[in-house]
Image (cartoon, rainbow over all chains, first blue to last red; front, side):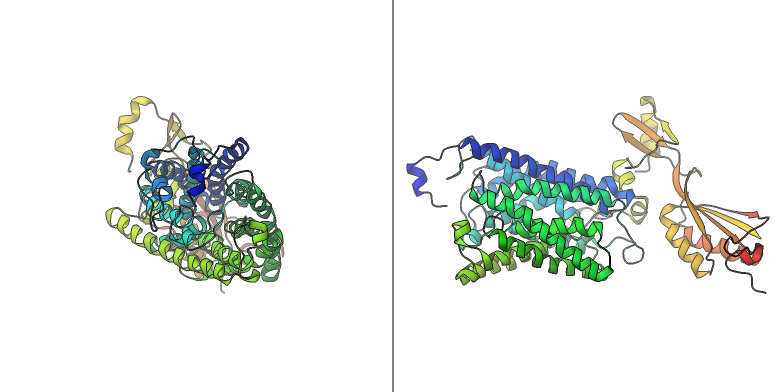
Length: 434
Length: 118
């Protein structure tokens, strides 16, 4: 981000860029609801609403923390480790573009905010079906600032990773590795569901899972396609690669499913879509469409292996955020260091095109990001756990999170429901065991 | 010949199945039912409408057994289903006139699993 020319030629808002980024921001926000649907289908029926609500809560919580503090820490100034406080409460964020950008600063802030929101929601996948809703919300607020904003600063906001040359097109560092390795820490601290490893805990609605994955893919065109921050070549390349990589990941997944179980599974296909989208996230605007296809075919392999292996361990990282986001983000960020081409991105070549240094920059990010995300999340959850219980009681876990935390059920018939009149409310407060 | 009906918490259904298999009782049907057994009503709110849920989800096991397996079956149901809280369910044992295994046409004691030891 060289500020010199910007002083002479004041950056102008481009209406075409702005129009696309408005749409892209809305697309990314929709991904969090799509993720809620995807996750809800993967859990048991009695936890449908709670799982979905963790994603909805992420919108409320991370939306607010981002505007108040997170955005400033991520994008104000060029400190090596953390940004400044100049944009706290959105001060100084207006219609003028940021730096050399061509879209209003406000819109840039909102676009980045939707990334913070979905990343917080992603971690929920590690702790669904047993974490207390209140504890999750406290954790979400702290995590969005202490982990997400910091990683976003390192990768996007002029922090040390970007300065030393790490390329991350749309969030392999803060979003994918950030969520994946935090999810592992969260699963370890919160602990496994009480029936994990004893009973089969199966997805209750595979159609939700497929529709959720499809809507996530649709939203990802805004996520990757918007990360060029305008209607430009980088965005077009990332947009096209977002079509190609998941398609190739699907084919690999089908083949692996056939080899392993002689059947192509629907939930496997939904997983492959997510994995493909994550793989191309860091690399989208930096690699050729041909390499993007190779990334889809090959990158799916380690993710599939992790998804097969993880349930054989005692780690109940319930919805495999580590496999689908951590491992895929890790793979994508390294792969980009191999095959980036200046002819396609105008920025840098990878190892295969003569710049080994680029690969080492990528490798550094692939080591430091997981370590930071894991360690800080681990400590953060231990601290939250010292103040309030993280887990529902065994009784509540058996009854289901929906009734316990929300007083609603996803599939309610109304049979046997007795209408409560307003004058009965006082008596209810006494009768309600919670 | 007796029909044992056990109405249990849905979250204990797997434990009950496990207990029944351990007791070598392998002929089982189960269905999802709703019922009320004196447990505290859950209060739920949907927008402005607050309701007391008078019925709770339960799973109903039906097991036809020969007389000497009645006690084993009842014990397995109890062991699998008990939490100690109100709402654990009930077991009913009914006389059964006839049982027929459709595949073979065997009837009565030969038609229920496990077959009575002679």
